[in-house]
Length: 174
Image 1 (cartoon, helix red, strand yellow):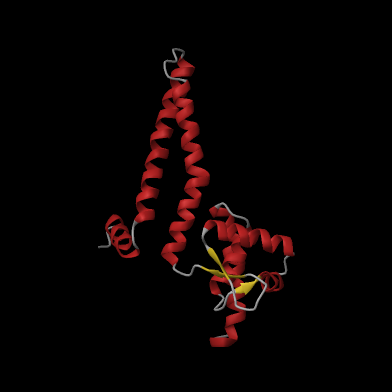
Image 2: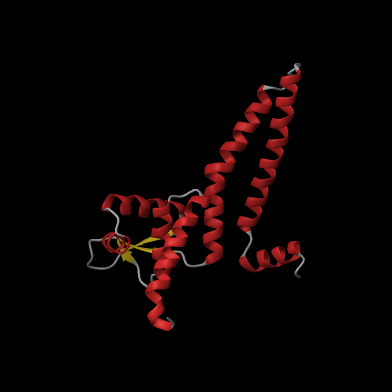
């Protein structure tokens, strides 16, 4: 099936696969499916339209739409004369990537880094073999988490063109 005939089937396959990828990014399958639906929608959609398209409850749709707005991946669109809220997705792929990167850093890397710093600080001066080994491991993990945080910060601030050149250089393709 090609052209317009394959759109519905391809759209459903994309939404299902994007949903499956969601758990790798630290979000629920439904949240990723809502994002995918709006990402490929040419027009903003209401909560009712999202519910109908994905066959999910109002509460599930509402929660996931608001969460995606919080991540910056969706915007609320107000239409004159309409009481309903409509939602549209950020469609710029690089911007989506950097938004997800920043949110994951805030939710995952920053708390882990804080814990590692606390553990290293609290075991400073340990004398036992176990204490020294634990302290050393915490310091190494802290250094790595700090590196990941710094890389995430730098990559998140790059524009698409320079990021592409940097990636090509790192991969040896440039």
